[in-house]
Image (cartoon, rainbow, N blue to C red; front, side):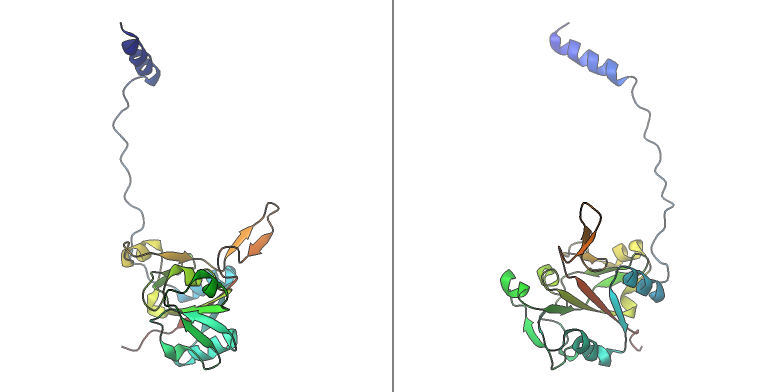
Amino acid sequence: MSQRDEVLARLRAARGAAPAAPAAVPRDYRRAGAEADLDLLVHRLTDYRATVHRCAEDAVAEVVDAVLGGRRIVVPPGLPRRWLPATVTAVTDDALATDEIAALDGVVTAAALAVAETGTIVLDAAPDQGRRVITLLPDVHVCVLRAEQVVAGLPDAVARLDPRRPLTWISGPSATSDIELNRVEGVHGPRNLHVVLLPPRSP
C-alpha cells in the first residue's frame, strides 16, 4: 500500500460509515401575505428610540420644519419638493463628496417599504431615496413613509423588494454598545431618526 493509499484509508476510517441521505427540510414556514399592522410598526419604531409623526401629506413640510427648520440638509434628487419648508436650505445630492455631506445637519428621504413586525425601514436607492451615504453621515434622518408601503413581516418585504437594487435596512437610529454595554448612538449612522407616516392614498 502506498503512503497515499494509507492516508486515504485512515481518512475513510476516521469518517466512519457513509452518511445517510440528508434529512428532508420542512417547508411549512410562514409565507408572505399577512396584513400589515401600522400600530405595531409605530410601537417597534418608538421602542428603537425613533420618533414617529403621523400626519397627512400636506403636513410633511411642517414636520420637517419642526425637526430641521433653519438648518442645511441634503436631499435626494427625486424627493418631492412640497415636503420641504422654506426654513431649510436643501442641498441636492449630485454626487456630493463625503465631507460635504457630513457637514450638513440632516437628510430627508422617502422609503421603499417598512416591516411592521421588526420596525425596519428599507431604502432601495430610488430617486426619492438617493445614495446610501446621504443617510449615514448627517446627524438627523427624516424618512417619509406611506401606509401602503408597510408590510407585515420579512417574507412580505422580500417578496416585494428587488434584490438587484442596493438595499439599506434601518431599524431605529444608529446605536451600538461599548465593552461595558453602555449605549452609544450615532457611531455608524444618524443619531436621530424621524419617521413621517402618511395615511393611505385615496383610491
